[in-house]
Length: 441
Ligand code: UDX
Image (tube, rainbow, N blue to C red; front, side, top):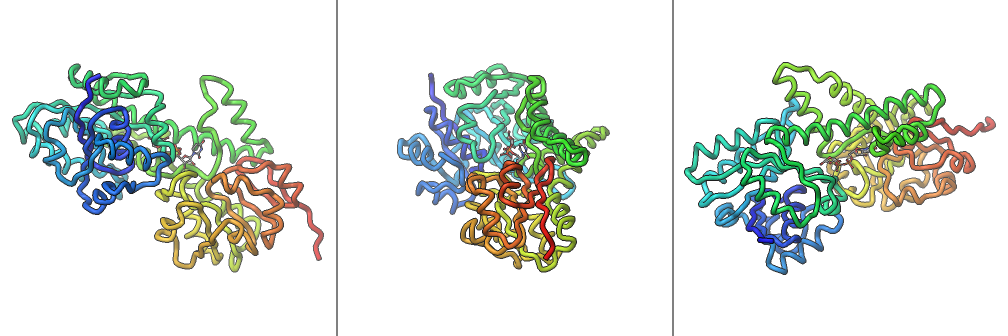
C-alpha cells in the first residue's frame, strides 16, 4: 500500500470524519479550514463536533503526525495527491443548494494547485456540479487534474463507525486513472467499491437520501391509517420488513425525519427536478407528510386537553435523533414554538443538545437539569428524541412524577401493556391509544 498525501477542505462533520478516518488508515492528511479558532482548537485535540469515537481518533493521528490542521490552502494543497472538498451546501430559501462554499474552494484550488491532483467531491452537490467545478478550475489553471465524485453516506452519531463499516463506496469519475487513485486510497477500509460516471454518483447520493425519506414518510402514513383502523404499525412494519425486497430498516414510525440531510436533500432534489421541467410529485408528498408528522404530538395533545393554555409540558429530547447534539430541522424546535404559541409552559431536557436548544427555542421555554426534574409536576410529557436515558424510565416513574399521567410518545419507546399497568394515558404513533378510565370526582 502506498500512502497518499491528502488535503481535506472543510472540517465540518463530513470533512473532519473523512480526514480523521483517512489518517487512521495510514494516509498523511492535512485538514484545512478558514476558521482560525476552529483550527487552533483542533490542534489542541478538541473536536468541534460531538461524534462518538472521533476525538480519540483525532488525537491519536494528530500525535502520530499523520493528521494536521491549517488555515492555509497553499500549504495543504502543495504536493497533495488528492484534495477532498467537504464544505457545506446549505439550503437556500427556495430549496436549492447554496454552492457558495464549493465555488470558493474551486477558486482556492485553481489558485494554489502546483502539481497534478485528484479533486474529490464529498459534499452533496446537485447533478452537474462536478462538471462545473472541473470547467471552472480548468479555466483558471494550467496544472492538470481530475475530478471525482465520492459521496458520503454517514449517519450522524455513528459517522466513525459508518466510515469503517459502510455498505459501499461510490466513485464517480470520467478518468480511469483518477478513479483508481481514489479506490486505492480507500482500499484499507475493505468496503465494496461501486464505480460509475460522475453524474450518476452525484445522483446516487440524492436518490438514496430521498428513498430513505420516502420509506419514513410511507410508514408514517401507514401509521396514521393504523390509528384510524385499529391496527398496530409496529407489527405492520415488522411483517412488511420480513419481505427481503422491502427490508426492515427505516420503517420506524414517528414524528418524522429531521437533521442536516433528509430535509435539505429532498427539497434540493425537488428543485433539481423542477430545473429540468419534471415535477417530482412523489417526493413533494414525502416532504408534505413529514411536515404534518413533525407537528403530530401537538395535534394529539390538543385533542386530549382541548386547550393547552396554562399546561406545563415536559419535553424529553430536543436533538433531531439520539447520540447527537444536532438540532437542525429537529421536530422539537417546531413543537416548542407551537406549544408556547398555544399558551403552554415548556420544560425541556436533553442529555447533550440542550445548549443548542437554548439558542433556538423561544425564550419562554425552561430547561431542566435532568429528566426527572423535567417531568416533576408537569401536566404531560412529550417524548421527542428516543435517548436511552428516556427508554430506561419505567411507566411507573412517569405516573408518579407527572401531575397528570399523560405521555405523548413521538418515538414509540414503550410497551402499551406496561403503560396501561401504570395507569398512564399513553399516545404513541400508529398504535392503539392507552386511556385509563377515571372516575370523575
Ligand atoms: C442520514 C442518512 O442516513 C445518511 O446516509 C446520510 O449521509 C445523511 O442523512 P442522519 O441525518 O445522520 O443520516 O440520520 P438518520 O439516522 O438516517 O436519521 C434521519 C432522521 O430520520 C432522524 O430524524 C430519525 O429520527 C428519522 N428516522 C429514521 C425515522 O423517523 N424512522 C426511521 O425508521 C429511521
